[in-house]
Length: 236
Image 1 (tube, rainbow, N blue to C red):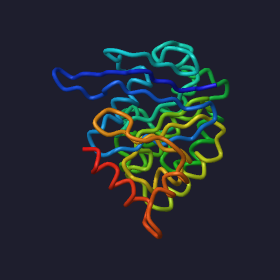
Image 2 (tube, rainbow, N blue to C red):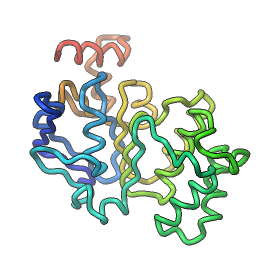
Image 3 (cartoon, one colour):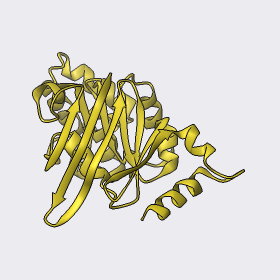
Image 4 (cartoon, rainbow, N blue to C red):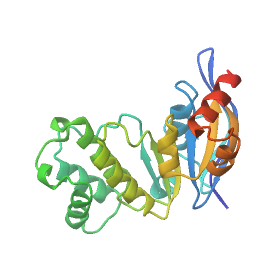
């Protein structure tokens, strides 16, 4: 069964066609990267999957439900690029508020658990708007995954994080039994968080397959980043 499906999706901004008959699927339990250069349509795709944008043409489903339905929202966790928690609420208030909206019974316990996991306990009484960009990112990830969602959509999840924090976040995400779609333009992030790649250029799928298959397309000792760069350059 596929938990993420797009079929012939078209999205236009005025005369600009951001997505051009985009089609792909992610099986339930799969860990896929949506890989592409800047302007490829990655963030637009993620917003459509999260139910924040409607496609002009085509069909989209999250575990069989329309992305903007209550059913899809209940099983989905979404981290947008450059996320902002509620700036005037403290770290604890953000966590407890979203936990309550998600129907989590013991909101205080959940907030404590997430603050410990993401090294945010010392900031629990600080307004989110006064946090460093890295700590805002950690809080935003915690808010996205607190309900153990069946489907997780992450747009550049390691932005603003230092190396130790990246390792901690990667560990947390890899221990989740969810379906993942991670949007990034950095191959090393795709390799750490996923095992399959959907490569898009100019709003269409250029290539899809496993990271091992992608490596095998290179010459002897050729870095996988070089393989990806060559494929993207040739497609433009």
